[in-house]
Figure 1 (cartoon, protein in one colour):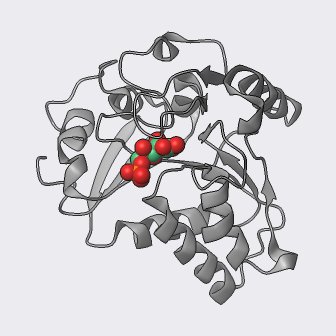
Figure 2: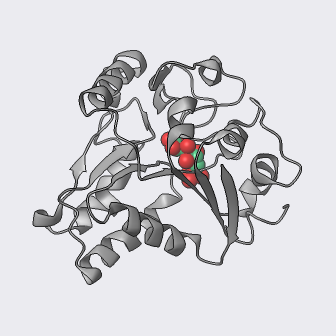
Length: 234
Ligand code: 6PG
């Protein structure tokens, strides 16, 4: 396992370049939700068009989803559709494995786990995560029992620990840690404390900071892309 921290004024640009590399040539890429990645997804769409990358053999997965309709503004799928997919040519659309949040947390998790297994549980070429101010990633929240699950690939999360307070579907900690390349994309001063707790020199794996369990427990490379504001307390 290796942990590298990259501080840059434009982490979205760095993230888009990493996503482009992983998505080229038919990779399996896991997208994150929230608001931070929208800029990176838009830059990825532009880069795909400019470079002429073929995404038709690429498969996009999701790290987590809110249990809302796909058209709901809180949907992580909608974020990716509006910022990335809508800006790709029709003939260059990747396969998109949407988490069906409308099924609810437990049925939705079982359905996604079945889809992963039916696809042969592919190795993810890049797994993108954000970081909540409470240290959560995907929909794995501090102190929740989901962090103790060791066998499931995908979990239902009945209660979110941070807004939006809707049930969630989330890849499990074990699944997050199994990816050869995990990338955290984090920006803004509101994340500075969580960044220090998860990735700082004195950070230790803790169930109170779920992202620290990935940073210190992942089997592959962990890259943390930060702007100076998010890195302020490192
Ligand atoms: C979600 C995300 C979540 C997100 C962080 C950061 O469904 O909410 O997957 O893990 O990455 O909460 O969100 P922001 O980018 O909005 O700060």
